[in-house]
Length: 361
Image 1 (cartoon, rainbow, N blue to C red):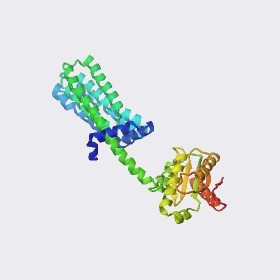
Image 2: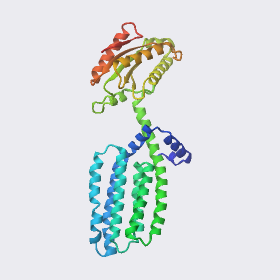
Image 3: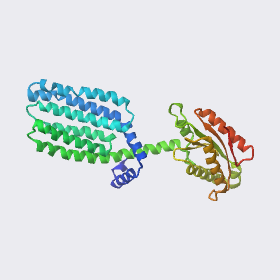
Image 4: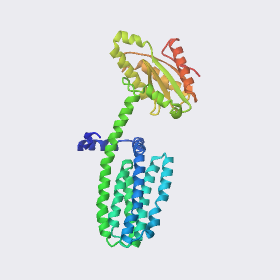
């Protein structure tokens, strides 16, 4: 963990960044935490269940027998088995969080059930505090509001159980548990910011891996990821566009490679701003770019790239005047073929006058 997360100002900055995320980004952050820490959660909850069952020994010391509390303690094995089975099937992070907290409350309820049969119920005050350890652990992959709701249920169950368990030391139980709840909630706020710092670092590394260093659009690594057959991220249909800067070698020869690099950065940025958020712009190689317009027919894609082509040729913000040529084909399930057709169309555009779009249907 970076030492900078211990800096108060940095924590405040992280808090501002976290609050500034849109809903999709927040979902991605929580989903990342759940995916990353779920095995840890499973082990912690299983350990909590085991600890609750092992309280049969303390039951024996208090009652002289384990028979009255045997069923309440062992009843945890049923929800634990269901938890372990369902946990493998769930992909929705919200359901995973609910399942985790639900399992925690089964530990509490089985404990309350067992306490009903104990002759001396005063030790419940200390026993209930151990639930906070598991609650703190769940904070790694829970939203603060999830923990807050879970605590409302937690104290609700304790107050309800007092109607039949008749705790002699209810004030002590609350006096011990309420401060613990505030401490856990405060710790989770800090913990959330720390995991957010880790999340930002991971995202930065991921972006650097899949981003072309010069133009800051996607690179071949990103392309391999989005076109992986097992996890295809291109919608059907989509428009695949191969575009190329006309006479780019002349730009480098006349103006130098620094200007040439600026032209590449300009075009990449212009195209990126001209397409939608769910589209992809990839630097395919040299001055060639691959643009993937998701959920887009070849007719719509042709209009889009023609608009970009015309705007680029007259844009005064370009480092030097340039034109582009493009080839377009429609993806309908066969990426390799669509890419080949788009490349052939680009070749035709370059060899038939340039500054044009050729459609290869």
